[in-house]
Image (tube, rainbow, N blue to C red):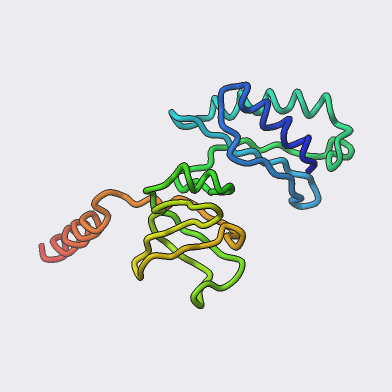
Length: 172
């Protein structure tokens, strides 16, 4: 996907009042798929996705000669990034400081490629995580992928109470 193409998609999404989290082009089962992730402060619902989809479809119909859109054989997917939002840019890591993230690396760091921890800070090109086994400074250039981690409140409590309920039912 050309940079101009991405900028047009981002411009359409932002002019509609949403954040363009990511836009990408890939091939699924021989068809081109344009995938766009949108977000807003209040969250995203189906109506938001439908609105952005209509705006993008209009743009795509008018610009079907763009590279990668041969014969108009593509489909568009507009969706929310979800509660475990993927992080693509260094600015994403800055924005979500204080939140727990899971990162996958393209090369080993301390003998590992996967880390989970809270983002303490972003200094230059380093993402600083507080992990269960200590502080980690991870160069952004080796982060292959990352996402927020969502944990249910009282997760352990809920598991224990459901186990106790099951055990209680057996005794009767």
